[in-house]
Length: 287
Image 1 (spheres, rainbow, N blue to C red):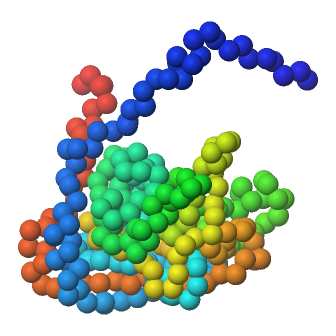
Image 2 (cartoon, helix red, strand yellow; image 1 turned 180 degrees about the vertical axis):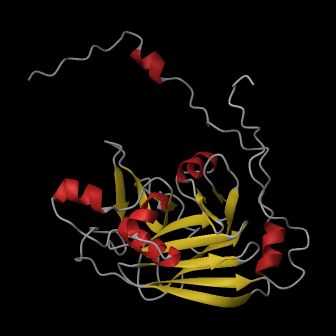
């Protein structure tokens, strides 16, 4: 079959020269209140922790107004994070809107937003020991909200094998265990993730999504303030540091640790839980 030749219009370069415009003007969003979150962090006490085994996932709960950390403990390891409203699985983390409101990779001061019609901050990033990384020469950054999660369906399509420890499957098993339900009852609630510690970007020539070995080392962590009551699930990706492969048992993997902290009494006196979107919901329909 012959490939149809595409004609280049005479004004092609003029069209390409259009000025880029940041899609959302976010100036009216509440600014990151560094002094408030610093007070919250000062003197907070660890009240719980959950260990996530390699090529597995675990769930955890964080009351509104508490802090949680995802910590590298034994070796470089990437994690896939899902968040839900602890009282309603239908409200969940919206990676696409988070990406549009902040950036392709998130760090201190950025918020994790929930899906429509809720659209409110679920968590705010309050500390990131990898914040120094920025953007490297390949255009890569850390903690991305562009990739989805490794899953057995794509893996089967590309490799023709069943692999049960992709992050999607790990998160599904963990949520099923938390809810006391079968995997097919909860799989629909597993959603696109925050790729914690993952170093990714798009190739400069073909603009394909790529990964490279994460810079994370034991002791590094990313920290969040829970703006609502949260149920979380974290998968320790079968790709390990995601510098070679994923969706197999080849790569060396390490556990991750989730730590939950309670702020000191009085540090939340000026804080209120995030409210749902104020949009009226009419969608232009005439009553």
